[in-house]
Length: 246
Image (tube, rainbow, N blue to C red; front, side):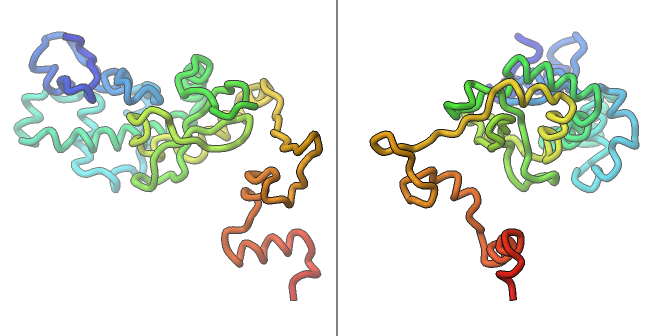
């Protein structure tokens, strides 16, 4: 049996593996080796062991101490059973805690370089937009707090977000990557965004460009600038012409 089999395929968890094999196991390696978790990088244990890096996370996690011990493999499974009879309750907490730690780790220098390697290898996929010429994507969250939305994929070329094509990745919490990562990543590696020249499709009728105000024109461009609310519309008017406000 593969010691780090994909838990989503109905294989044993590291807790069960610890009972089935005498070989040492690493929860972090097991977690990141799963096909579902290919977007994640392995967080260094010394980063997790520093209490400063974990400030504020305990409020989001039930049985925080026990969950942290699972991630760091600090206590044998038999001893853990004496404290928490149903260890299956800790698996979701361990995934959530690791994800929140991961959000912080990938903003560090070491974390950035690890994610750069995954980006270059195309682990996050390619942009589906034709004119982006298979530009590599970056994982991105729309919120920094958990349970507020799933992960999205950000294209450095068209600057847009996409839903992961693999259903396994669509359930990943976006907070595990956060709102800052892709933009700090591009600041750290500025040459990435310059690899593909940004091109916008130009709609034409009989060789003539369609006016931007036409409903059959470049619809997505004006839809993106359309205000969502009256308040947004008023704010937009102020930026365009202060004399329009009374």
